[in-house]
Length: 585
Image 1 (spheres, rainbow, N blue to C red):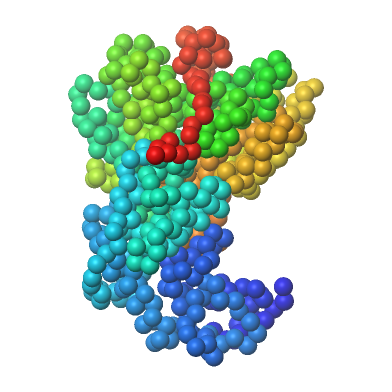
Image 2 (cartoon, rainbow, N blue to C red):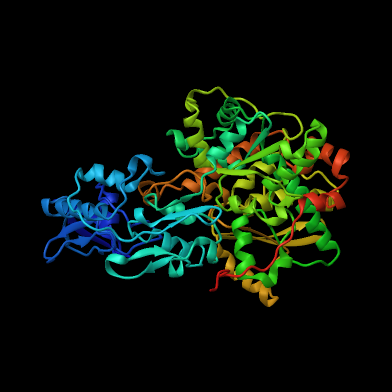
């Protein structure tokens, strides 16, 4: 592309042919407000908040879609443009539920910020509001169309990131709303509950179903022994809830806060990640040696599991039978831990702090309930934990670092930590599989080939006499070609890691919100969060799951061996075909 010159606000600037007015303005330090626009995701000019004045044009133009050209003259903040933007936002607000003080996005709402920025103070337009839908039937996602601004971000995320497209615009004119087909519940369509729609929503129209008060009630119940576990990705995002820079590791402060809140035990899900590698790694070795079903696919991401059960049920035998780490932890807490502590499993209440919305539904699966006792009782997101810490009056930034409880499940390896990044499960598994297959303690353990935030990563590795072909995919739009190969019987791989969210758990549907200003700036927040996990991995004395001494003790004292009968009973699960539209009538 060639260089061109144009004038913005009486300044001559250079730009690449093909850029938009919005892109060029921002490159030159000029902020044009937006609402519907997200870089690399949406570009429809639907909201008209970014209107600018173009010399020679009859009407104002949307900067996010207007291409620059040689000699173009643009005024981004003329009186006409400013008044038009304010008028557009006033019209949006006129059809918006204004319960801002009680809204889940209060102080973290992009519409609120626009109102402040553009000086919208009064109800300029009064009248009827579009009939709304409130849906809280699904286990993880709540939809409130009274707060929807019709920006289309969620529609684009579902279609482009996951390739599902379960969200769309329905009806016309004043009655237009966004939701699943026929205005159904998320529970009645093939939603994978990944929560990426929540992550891109600028307002409170989509959010997770909160379980904060259930957890608070459990903590204050004298008959309950309440255990909390935190997923590796949470430490890479939680600080953002308190204004800390993206990419700040807050492991110690998080532990200190949880202990102050009154949990009886505070553990890291990383222990269970190590346990998952033992079960999954040995399952893979067994499949390779016994000519089992290959490629084997990871089963740690419940959003991905939801997807494959509805979209590709014919390849379910390729999934590892392992439960996800936090569910394994719950199973161990209510069996091994209960036995050691002489507690009734019914009196143990397990809380998982997860970067994921889909895990709220995972804990409700019938395969995760044994004799009426759930493996995990409550799942709260990173965002929910941030709210709880504030509710308890804890000054998070000033907390001194504390350590996880060290008994039973206190030790974890670097392999467990990197589960939160795309490629982390694969790398952790390879560290153990390589040692077992070669009967050596291999020193080269950093598998750079599977790291990074690229959509698809492939590698061919030589482990002893075995050549292993692996692939790592994040998001269903990237994974789909791999699944089609498996379906056709042409897949060249032995082992595949699939994560439901782009970037892995560090960008899960329950992580701290990344607003449009950051998303559109080009700052790679996924990479910044992932870096936190790899740094912790490198700092730990033990970096292989099978070297975790407490894992070894668990097998010696309770489970017997990886993939034993008891291990299968407690740590493995089954999958089954699910209807895409269960409520067909």
